Length: 82
Image (cartoon, rainbow, N blue to C red; front, side, top):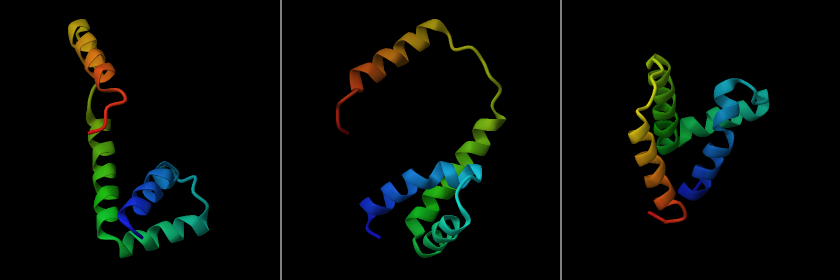
């Protein structure tokens, strides 16, 4: 698969793969692709590690000034291509 196709493939299926709702046949194809595509496997590994790390974080309230700043930044970037 090309990188563009891989990216769409992975993003479209990743949640179902991770939460266990992917049908067995699709899961086998997904895992086969992971074995054959090092960039996708690296992405999956990174995604899984991020999820594990996030689960370790304790919820804390975001200071209002920071929340406003982040929201303003996101809104200013909306629609801009990087």
